[in-house]
Length: 139
Image (cartoon, rainbow, N blue to C red):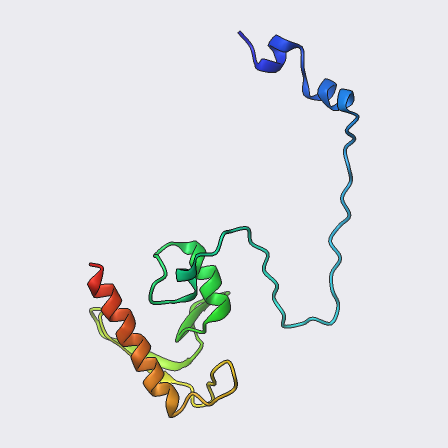
C-alpha cells in the first residue's frame, strides 16, 4: 500500500522544493559574559498555582523544577552529592527513616533579608505542620 507520500507522489524533497523552503543554518547561541553564578532556565510548561506551594505540589517531577528555583530546602541534590546541606547545617535520621532532626544554619535569611532566627523557627514549624496536615488529609 505504501505511505501517503508514495501514494500521492509527494516526498519531503519535492514538497520542500515546491514550497521554496530552504534549510536554514541557525547561529550558535551566544554566551553572556560576566554572569557567573546566574542560572537561567527555559522550560516549556503551563504553570499551575499549586506548584508555588510545597504543601500542595503534586508528586511529579515537573513542579519541583519550579520549587527548586523558588524555595530552599533543608537539603538539596547537588552534583556528586545527592543530599547536600542547604538550610540545614547538619541532620540526622532515625533508623526507620520516619523522624529527622535538622540543625538549621544560623546565618540563613528569608528572601527579603530578614534573619531566619528567631522568627524563622515558628515559620518552619508552621510550614511543617501544614504539610503534614495536608498530607494526612489526602491519604
